[in-house]
Image 1 (cartoon, protein in one colour):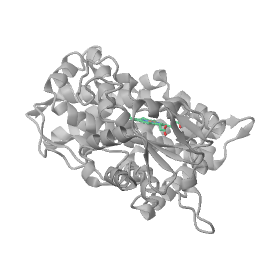
Image 2 (image 1 turned 30 degrees about the vertical axis):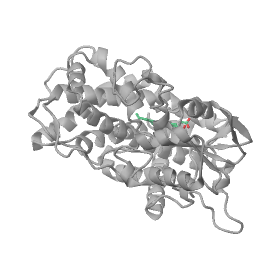
Image 3 (image 1 turned 90 degrees about the vertical axis):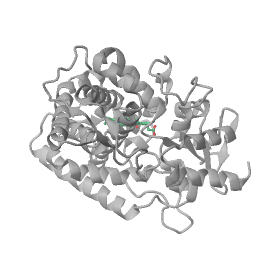
Length: 423
Ligand code: HEM
């Protein structure tokens, strides 16, 4: 492939006009795989086979220090992000040690105990919309729910949820592949650095409070934890809390918002969610994860020379994995562009990643989405989108609509029974 055409393919990934429907572009990239970014140590992969192989390969690191891309130019400032890395951006053994400390809060069992609290929250949010008489699927449901849930899990004050939400949304742009494709940071670097400092200061203050008066929450557990007989550093505690807040928030917003948008086009599925949630909801969520991945792209860096499905990848190369392209690879899924909750292989999607960094919060993300979709189907009668198609946020990786204003025939009260077998 000529370098001009690969430049235009990667430029189109970043282009805001691609957000409403990036999938034809991901197909072009898959057809041309591997797509090398001219003059940069970067390759883009979009097939299910190649993305899966990289995610499972221990030579494919998540530590940016292995990327030539993140090395400072001779004598110049670092090109990469300045923030301290959380365990998402670490390799073994430190990655596993920190992940194991956070993990008990996110097992399927621990998460099931959160279900009553999540149901209450969803009903509160729908009550607020009903009292006002209008409903925006993003502002009223998808956006406030995950931040409130993760704040409760972390043991932080939910009264300030808008404060966390705006900062975590700003940080979301840090993962957009500007550095890989253009050699410059994603837009909004100064605001992101400020947001990050503010969040880190916040978690430092919280650490001080919990040191003085521990509670039954994640922060107190991290403060009491040890790895090989030594306590965690304050940096590790702060970056772990920041990771959990960000990773647990923006992705789930995207799953619920993109999911509602798809479901509005499938009233039969909404009816099935309403009438038989136990039989329907898990498969619907899995298929929505496959079709509209909330996190569309991840990066890996070659710690050593490697070969991926016959593609030679020199040490230091950054591999940009289009998970959203892999999920619609016809080599992996039949009729990949069709929403089909009855397909039996949706769970082969890569939307939660794979391997060592497989999403720690997958059970929580799935549960929040199941409950949100089921309750939406039960309480919101005759929903129709006001602005179709909706406007999208500029985020490339954390793709999703900015708002979803709806017209409805009614929003039923919270006395509407949750059917038995509801998640
Ligand atoms: C439903 C929406 C979600 C999606 C689509 C999603 C997606 C992902 C993906 C793709 C990764 C792997 C990133 C990589 O390999 O580079 C990941 C990692 C992670 N996710 Fe999620 N996530 C979701 C919800 C959550 C929730 C609710 C939490 C709760 C805290 C969470 C916490 C994490 C953490 C801590 C990691 C890092 C794991 C590691 O490095 O070992 N996620 N997520």
